[in-house]
Length: 424
Image (cartoon, rainbow, N blue to C red):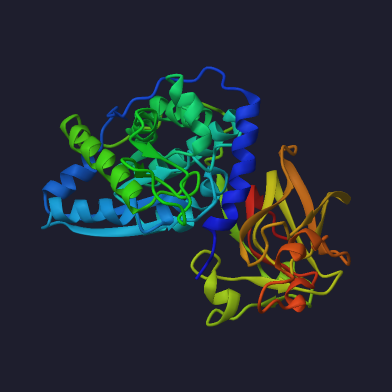
């Protein structure tokens, strides 16, 4: 089992804090739902008893056993003759900045008829300009692949968003999503608005730790600041299904057309590129897919390359503006020395204060580069990260093994590019 939600909660909190500190410029008022161009193609297939594939694309709130399976059950009960297939394309703690790169592999390869996109919470700490580029990139990738695929944005909530809603506005990330939705005529459903209303009315509370006695007369929406309880997910599901009934009334089938981009620099060409053996020095080994980390993360990273010895390198050339790695961080994670065009761009550690286990991550190498050919090398550093902040927390725990927290390991699954690999 891949553990993600608990760890990424801490990362998320730091991002939300930075959002609030940065202010809330030009926020938009919330609407419980906006039908816009509707979901006519999906509803036509459902009403026609056809085969319908629904993709759920988002973070840990979508990955949970909550609104995703609950709405899927509603679709199946409402259209029992339709052949409905689910794509669970959710990864905890990840936003649209990773989503835009993995959209092809995790969503489009399955040829969905309807895609729910849920990234407002995990985009909470991102700058609006960044969100426009990534969310628009996702939309354009989907409709470039299939003009008949319908898209619906859904907005969940973090406790840090409440001040915005109390003032009558969406929070900053949801505002950015809404502007993309407006530009492309994409329906949206704002479950966060209903949660904020009930919170203000004193009918709902969060966070309420699981060990505490629930407040009398109030629904416990979440035990932490954003991950709903089962009752919380029931609330989200009710908002969504009620909205879908209204959106259906305003929906007509037909192909979607791509207008001029909202942002010329959007990331519709973001891609994952497989790592080839020729890019690696001899010390890299491919992890087996039937056990260990190779099996645990194989659903997202079909091939994971591991190097533990300092000096081992991954090298490639590409023409474009951005390069990252889709990788793992964990207790034995080391440091990566990133060199671009012969100069050390940065050294990035693959261990942080949440690394008591392994999780999916992205390693930023360089971005905003001149759009030309670049040479990239990622090398295993001989230096280890400072692990003491984590060791202080786990050293006295039963079963603690110091060997787990020793190593200079890099584990990489894909190259992430805005651009194209240049073959030697």
